Length: 71
Image 1: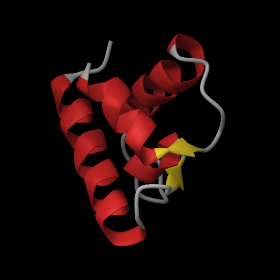
Image 2: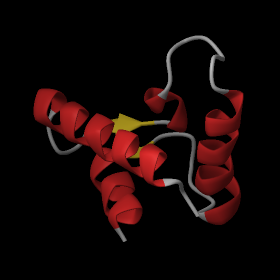
Image 3: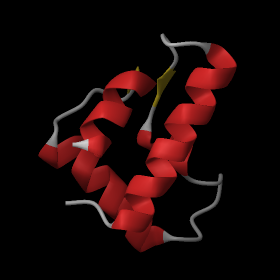
């Protein structure tokens, strides 16, 4: 289960990517983080949700991720 702060961040990033690149844009769970490991617990929460819980591929459509997060 995702924390509310991570859900909010994921939805905002998905919305921004979809708005700028269109409905077919793909992303990985790294899209929700800077290029440095400044929040390792949050990164592991996202990775666990992405890889272990949902068994998603490295890149997935932002629309799919947004729908899963909003459930």
